[in-house]
Image (cartoon, rainbow, N blue to C red):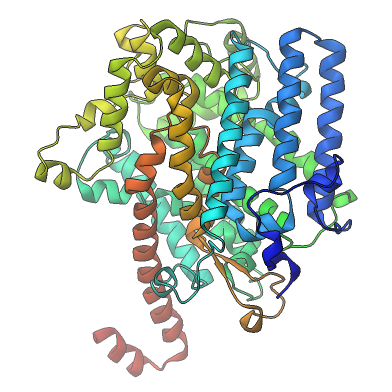
Length: 568
């Protein structure tokens, strides 16, 4: 068994030998050729370059305070989690903490610097924003230390119950294509054929089950990374053109439902999966190569150019979404995309027009999805208006937890959680309305942040609720990874880790699990979210496996044998 699994590398807290980033991130002698080592080194170089820019051009006290918090946050993460032993032993919980630190500290600094703005741009309460974020990070790190003290080896065993129901059985390529088509069909049904299913909060269990299949639309895009879920089959020569065609189809459907997130989230999961595999050493590549630089440049140009324009075009025509057909919506979006003057005017209007709930932070609508500190700021602004431990916010938070329970269970216990009204608005909406916003604000689905909503409902106790709630969440996410003993490892995989495809499909959700809208979302995940993910995946996995075996078997059978099999 390699060094990364030795017991002395599983201590709850690491005592760094020195203050250099090498000693912080690598308590043992680092592999200077590894992608992880070069990633950590490059991240610090980029961070310091961005800090120099911020200090030179935006040297306010608030901005300097923010920079100090960002440096501390990245140092804490590097010290405890950007290390081979921690990533291999607690992979997805480490990835969750990487996501929180990146979205609340690192990405805002990087993206505001690229846009020539201070990291505190448009923040009314910058000290509160970064103060709450650094306290939350410390609580999350302490919670993970407790988790490591309780669970020494969290990864699943392939022979465990989860393994026996198929969670770690490598799916066939055909299965992933079938999952993708089923997910695409669910999207068409929920938003085109029966749009009430996609937009309504409550409804028939069958309709909600169909809606739960939508994330599987992106399953085929994990075929190139099959090594992560334990498959060593060589890729089909037709894979690339088939994925391109499927991408175009998904893109058209996303425009038809007028959802930027629908197009983005699945592909970011694929990107996160590849990046995480590089950090773990599953795939090998040098960080600084001409090819990587070209790919990074192309991706940057696409995100800041055509993709950003498409996203803005969707916003321009959004007001027509409920008034015209999906085909007309696609046509209007295309027309808006071609009108570059209208796109520029819309962006300028978004950057200069503000209301009481102001979400302006980054110009690029896609990078803003991963680093918009205004959600935190706006929530804290509203919470200061209503004070700590507001009774209505507390009641709403409790009902939000109860609403996660199935309707039959609530009816059996005669519990009125008022699910339709609770989930018919976002937590940000409810906080805004409680703070004096217009009643029409309810249903606008403003994005709240657990710091502001937590202070409003629980006061400073929200930090304790966050810490205790995250301990089982860490464990459940790490169960999506199995440890395969070296003796039985398939040659060439390069790692004893095997990810469940179920976990890979929700990588974006794991990366963005925090910041959530409220600390009570940990309870809803424990009560329903995790179990629902498992059940949907297992049902779809077993169904597609049966179809795949029949289809693949039919190609090698004579017609008489195939006819007998299908009659059984």
